Structure formats: structure tokens, C-alpha cells
Length: 114
Image (tube, rainbow, N blue to C red; front, side):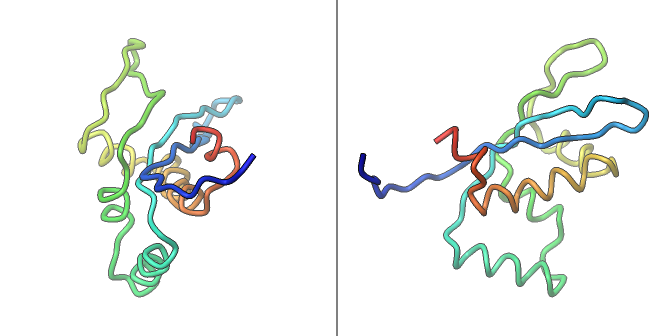
């Protein structure tokens, strides 16, 4: 089998969330825009210098979320408001932002989609 060089515009990665007080962690899926390594390095430098906030990074590159329901069990549609709400929850913010880094690194579990 040969490697086919092609553009892959996005990738889906699992995001594990440990809800305080719950024994079992929950997993949602985040679909992220992929960048060339050179652009990823630029974004990392902007973050390091404080020129790019987590909110801006997530806002520009998060393309979708799956596996989120409300208390009635209804699927919650992806929206800017949902992203803002999730980034305001301490135990969700960190795993969601870290999933951007996992996506840009092409983690093995993420590659299964492509």
C-alpha cells in the first residue's frame, strides 16, 4: 500500500471530560481545522506571546462538536454560544483546548477518521 499525498482539511479527535463528582469520564468529539506545521508553529508562538487567546484559537479552528446533550437528552447543536459556554466551564476548557494540540499533532486516534 502506498501513501497518497493529499490535503486533509480537518480531523476529529476525542475530548475526554471528567465531570466533578462523576466516576466515569465522558467523551465528546471535536472536529478541528488542520494547519501545515509552519502555520501551527506560528499559532503556538502567538499563544506563547499572549497574542492569541484560547477563545480566539478555538473560535477560528473548531469546526464542530458531537456527543453533547442537554439535561433532557436532546442533542445540542454546534454554535458559537455552545463553544463560549464550554470554554467557561473549568473542567471542559482545558481538555477542549488541548484537543486542538492533539489534532495538530495528528494523534493516532484522530487519524482513524481520515
